[in-house]
Length: 399
Image (cartoon, rainbow, N blue to C red; front, side, top):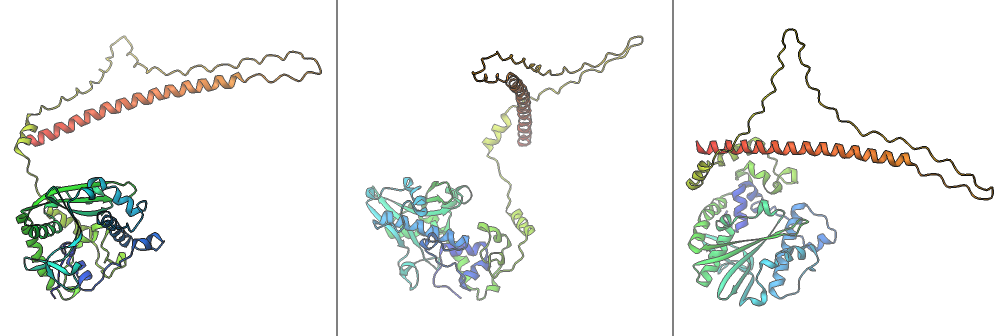
């Protein structure tokens, strides 16, 4: 059954696994909408619901920052700290000539859609709200906030952002409405873990390129619209492991009882592998590199030759490390006679204890020197192995 509208997030879910899409949009199994204030007050929710609630709270801080309204959460709260980490990558509100906050995309009225309207493109209705669009010195910039547990794992590269479906849909909407041929985009990734880090990803997307990116997604949307039952949707086993595990699997309390196959995962990934073509100029540089000099192998000492009438020379013994001699305790001085009414003299210092400690300290220093020598030998061997690895790589590239 055709849906009234689609979104970039729904199509991305359908790309990963149509069965998961069917659970969400046919069976209606969606995550509950929990306000972050309830979680701060102590409400216990699953990790995925907590992550979604935190993301919405961070977006609310951005809406308050650029909308001039009162912040829904204190800046010292977790959402405030996360959003504040990325303020340096955002334009100053006072320096903007025009600001659009949480504006819905499209110009076609559809009841129930975010903002009550949608964007029609390639025969499909697309819904969504742009986080931010600002105009400075006559140039427009659209911004989207992305909360993530790991910048290294989940932040898109500029090349991937240029081909991202959500980015393309928003570019088409803004470019058509303002008469632009291209749109500058900034995806601001905000890390939610203990370390507060932010990373902006910038890209300029031409309108024609964005229209082409949406075309295959529209074809998938029409295909998903033909599904009538959850069981009619295909299962993609490799998607079971995405983003920490599918929320619809039985292991997470969902209805899907599919046996997740590790073998199927690797079999699917095998088909994605392609042979990387080396740049000819890079290949020439590798071929021009001289092979690293190989260290001469250590020559074993010649075996002693026995002669008639003379005994064979005995092998040289390794000199033994001698420990410093232990200091002998000095005899304690005899106490001098004191008059009867005077108190007894204090005991003499234990010279043997101090001398024994000094001897032990010298012994430990000797062991430390021996350990440092072993470390230096290991570092030298590491350099030799690295040289051999470089030579092997250079030889493989030259073939």
